[in-house]
Length: 293
Image (tube, rainbow, N blue to C red; front, side, top):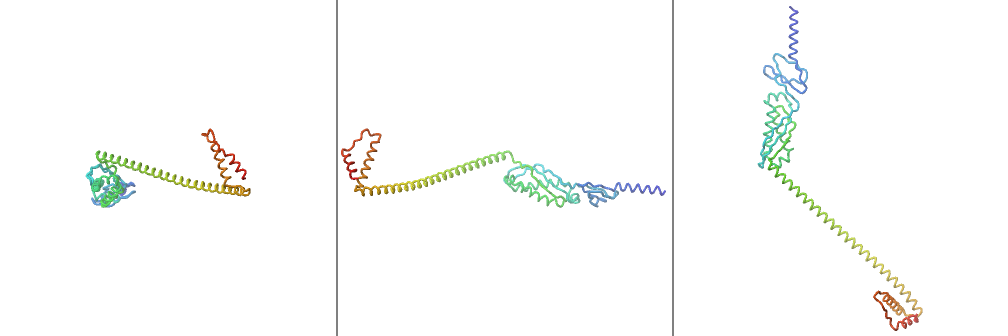
């Protein structure tokens, strides 16, 4: 009798262990209830519970998860209607709050994200909505993170995927963008022409300055050359005058005769001269000059 009792106890113990052992995966936490009331949260690994009075009420995935925000029409502050969709990333930090704090956690986050997004973009113009996407993401993230804290969830990231204006607004924006590009191109072209004209004027100015400086230097050199030539001629005349005076000659008559002969030679060398008429007293004049020398 005792033998059968021992066997029965062993079988009962084995069943108790098999029913009471729970192996929780790494990415999960399990909520355990006893008599319909929260008892404990099982962490990853090997756990043991009372199989008769306790049960696993919820298996909670504690990995980061994604909720899709379906496209919805939103009216901006300037009465433009845009279709917006996005995604929300969240992670359960407290399995107890996520199970007992709200029913359908993911649906609650999705609904809250959609209504909050409508409120945020409803205060912004269309241009602000299109250009300040990061601001919208950050503001929506803060609202969702604060609101989901009692639910044991942590909103890690919010991203708007598409902000789609109506077709007529797209066409108007494209026309405006094209006009802006043409305007910038014309401004750049005008700036280039202005810079080219400035550089050309600077070049002409510099050329004129260099030309004036060159003319000034040439004039100074020519003046210096004339001065030296005049000095040389003066010295030559002085030497001739001294030579004539030493022989009792008249320097003035000598110079006049020299110029007279030079001009006659130039007259004879002219291509328009066929005949050269010499004065009748040329021989007497020359003779008088040489006799006086």
